[in-house]
Image (cartoon, rainbow, N blue to C red; front, side):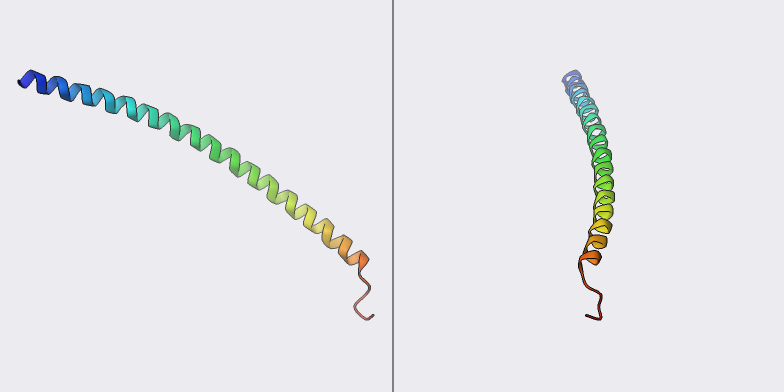
Length: 68
């Protein structure tokens, strides 16, 4: 009876170790994805800023001066 309990605990520990390894792998993949998404967001933000400055310049060219 005592030996069965030890075997049962060893089996549970083995499953938990496998689960921890799998979760660690998933967390690593998610971190890589987060890093890529952050880089994409930064690039998009820079593009929006550059386009915004171009649009503002074009709007100023098309508008008459404020005294009209």
